Image (spheres, protein in one colour):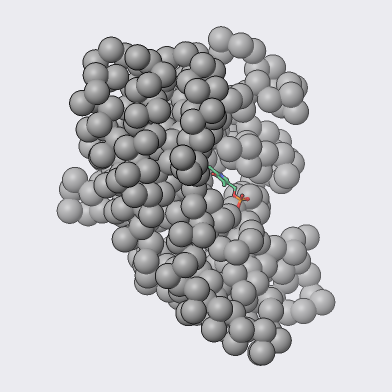
Amino acid sequence: MKPVPLLDLKAQFAPLREQITAEVLAVIESQQFVLGAQVEEFENLLVDYTGAAHAIGCASGTDALILALAACGIGEGDEVLTTPFSFFSTASCAYKVGARSVICDIDPITFNIDPDRVEDAWTPRVRALLPVHLFGQCADLDPLLEITRRHDAVLIEDAAQALGARYRCDSGHERHAGTSGTIGCYSFFPTKNLGGFGDGGALVCNDAGIADRLRQLRVHGGQQMYHHRWVGWNSRLDAIQATVLKVKLPRLDGWSAGRARNADRYDLWFAECGLVERGCVRLPQRAAHASHIFNQYTARVENRDGLREHLKAAGIGHSVYYPVPLHLQECFSELGGRAGQFPHAEQACREVLALPVYPELTEEQQRRVVDAVNGFYR
Ligand SMILES: *Cc1c(COP(=O)(O)O)cnc(C)c1O
């Protein structure tokens, strides 16, 4: 039986092959590779798509987070309050600007930072709140914004997994993930919902002064070449990435809808075969306040190690995002994190399993995933 991969980028590329290769060839002919017209066009498309006032391309999602903190003046002696259940960059960015991370536990239902715990975790040195829209579902931004304003801090959104997700879609005033706080950060790493052909990232914001600073910080901290106002970075988006992303962006909502459709189908089929009722599989939950674009379909499963062995033997792609919470990473040991400190995040790390949910996944492939999971628990 052919394996079912966790993600199949070749299936996404096939129908775009001609258009992308023609446009990439045009970039090669132009011999204009870094920033330039292609990047500006992509930034304009991102403005149109998200509704943010400004978009700034950069070299990766990790860099976007670092540039965002730097542009807000976060540095030595400051703290950044964030979640323990995320990709590494969410916590490492603070250290790259000389600050530190402070951690606050998650809401076990959504896996996102729990607004009810943020106030207690706040310290006098916290100057930025950094929620993550994990797996493609927005954290509950309105209460987070309220707390941030009360403390005169900034809110920076790690929307690396969530470009295209909407917040408050229940209200008629929906906002794109990344556009509620001071700055939103996106990643175009190939496995994100909008993936380039290499590393890439972007920031969005509504403040012209911050946009201006970000544009300078990504090119060594100056407006004019060889004149440096700040010590910045080399973090530019290149023209080939921008060209690929320009072709893909108009398809993003369709892909996200395909992922949500596949997620619904898993929910239904796992329930139908009794796995939900028996507690073997606990389905990912959708919050009322947000749309979910399922960068990952992450369930909680019983006897995860056993199931993983079984899926591996059956050729079913899967992965654990994330096996170790950020407060227990070796490199952050100076934070004094200890086991048991953030029980919801630690439990999630022990239970979660991501299954294939990419939009090109066929019903037949999905049936094989469900059959394999069911076969294990039978
Ligand atoms: C992927 C990711 C990043 C980092 O993006 P890169 O482009 O890989 O540097 C940051 N935060 C989260 C939550 C991510 O998933």
